Length: 287
Image (cartoon, rainbow, N blue to C red; front, side, top):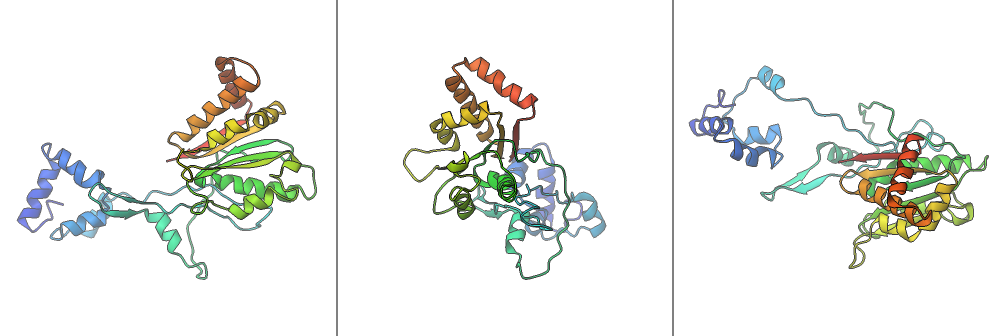
């Protein structure tokens, strides 16, 4: 950029950013602020970079991966996604939005818009109808389990299906209780999450009370039910944020197994590892 800058002060600033002395300031200006190529070019308007240089230097947009949150049995020829619109404030108080999620959110469903997509095998295998399930999916982690439950609801009309218990979490009941009506419908009237079918639906609203409550707290409240299903050969599926959640949930499972099976913490850890080896403990996490 400094090579193609016509304004002297911009050229000097760009040379400084590219130098060893300017490395820290470059980090503060660029990486920490998550500036886009367009924003940088707008900050240095005298830069007249030829297009063929630009396309060689600018990396292509990364593809975005989303969990499929629908069932082919329930919605033939459709794929549903559960997308959180990413937004944040930079250290210099600039409002930023995620490129792909904002673009998707701005689309009009009435318009015929062609979107390039691809399908890859996910890390959460589709469970058989006879397999009991313990699902833990706070926030948009509920996405794959929406598909699981739709699939099992269709299967239950013609076959007997195993119990499912689902632990969901969000900040506020009134603000981000995703698919509320769907979960509640399945948890009543002999639905696949109903207690009459051996299932259960438990929600942690982390900000609706002074003390924060997360999915792992709800799991401990229902430790007996979790252990009963594990003893029946249930599979565990965990999906959501890759920060602390997967480790905290795994720790809760270890505590529950130790308490309900009356074994040491070390034996409980081995129990979880055995589940993993047998293909019955699955985690899909994203940042």
